[in-house]
Amino acid sequence: MRGVRTGEQASESFHLVGHDWNGQIAWSTAIRAPERVKTRSVLSCPNADSVNPTACPQIRKTPGDAHMAIPPNELPEGLSTHEYRRLAALYRLMDRQELALKAMSRVPEMMGLDQPMTDEDKQRMGEFSANLLKAFRRASTEGGDPFAELSSQLTAFGIPEDQAAQFVRHLAQTVKEAKEAPLPPREVPHGLSAWEYYELAQKYKQMGWTEQARAALQFAIGLDGSGEGGQKALRFLRTKIPRNSVPYAAEQRNVLGFNQLCAGDIERARRTFQALIEECPDFEWPYGNLGSLLIQMGDIDAARGVLHKALSLNPDYTNAWLHLARLHALESDFAAAYECLARVAEIDPDEPASVSIRAAIDDLAAE
Image (cartoon, rainbow, N blue to C red; front, top):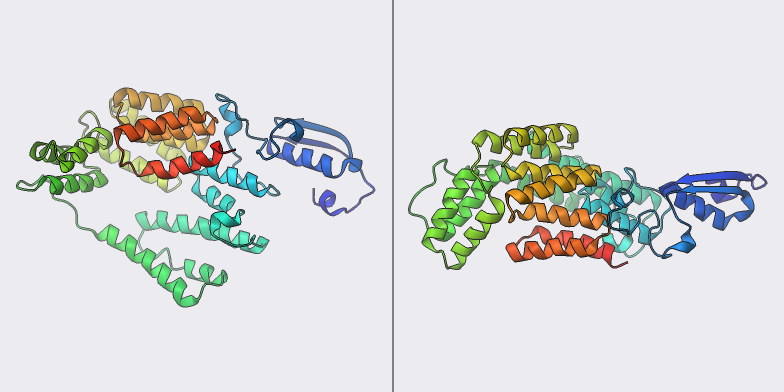
């Protein structure tokens, strides 16, 4: 396509074939250089004149046509700013953050820039974004200082060396403090206030100690059932703790699968969640995690069934509702997506994850 774009060998004409994302390039080429195109064959990409010219034509907006809402595994070149913005929202909804950051780097205002980046800046930004995510993943599973190499990448953007070093030190210190934080007591202590039990339950939940979290929340509810602390504890119990008691080994298997997913080991994480579901079919968390993983893989129909199963086990499981909101938005069924978010707001008005998911859905629905 470089020769067509630059006019090289302009005496030659050709037959042009494109599918899906490449179909958009084929249509664009035929419009810009009609004298060069003998015939044009395009699959799974409508004529640009037949759709909203500001929309990304490769992604249909028909609810239920999920496979066409899935963006490519590699960021395409040569798209408009509008299309990159839409891609960034789709990648965010799929939890494919590295690709989302790369797409955002093509939209200056999304990156807080006043003017478009050069091709070299785009490459640097993409590399830095990918390396930053990899550093966080390594920091959670390995020793050493995985952030050190980021400093030179920041200075390449023109950031002063002292500021780059300070930023990297802050990242490393934050991760270090999180890893070295003292563990909560194995046995739930007596004599705490409702708020203290509520805060302790959150620490237990972070550790994957759901039964200790359940006990701490029940203490909080018993001490202040009608007060703010007791009501928060009740919402946390309903939305963030498994509906049924689960063995500690099952909790840790779920943590293992989640860590595998965060480390990018998708296939191992999938096997872990599937095996855990077979062993503990009444445990909703692996269903939710598997549903999120399947969305990331683009297997929308399988994700739908898994997430509905999770909600049949616990209708107040907000993570499953949030994953369903992402799924419906990927299908361009925005009414259903917003209904899921409304359900989350009804169950837990303080759910923090709703904000970023709603923002991504708003970006798509605004078209």
